[in-house]
Image 1 (cartoon, helix red, strand yellow):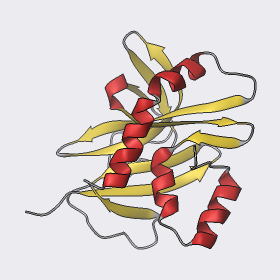
Image 2: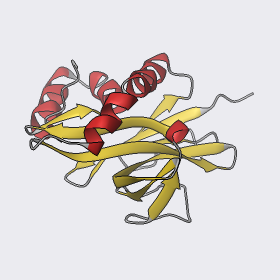
Image 3: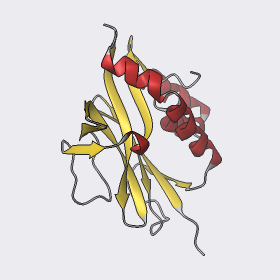
Length: 169
């Protein structure tokens, strides 16, 4: 039986962060894209999602009442895709009854009925990661930190400096 593949696409910039795509069918990196493939059962990625979920209550409280130096509150949510799923960053997002609604801020790779800027309703259980900016540095974004740690030291340092990601949080 073929193992599941978790593919992670870094698309960090002013309006988007990292996207994770769970894709069992395609195991090879497409030429020219920025997608890194990670086994679906990768323990470091699972730990990053667990860490994000453990801090979700505090994050949502901050998002509801941000300090003046906090902005760009974003959530990464799981979107079902048949037997697979794609995780997309949403910003801004608002509470809607017992769920949330947010705007997609990265380009979906496999979910054909969504595109950048579309609104998407989701539940708390769908949130796999979160991030916000405080005093110019990114807080959260644990799944991206897993990928950064796997890069050569000089690329790690340059990436962290450019985007202000604090992976020691």
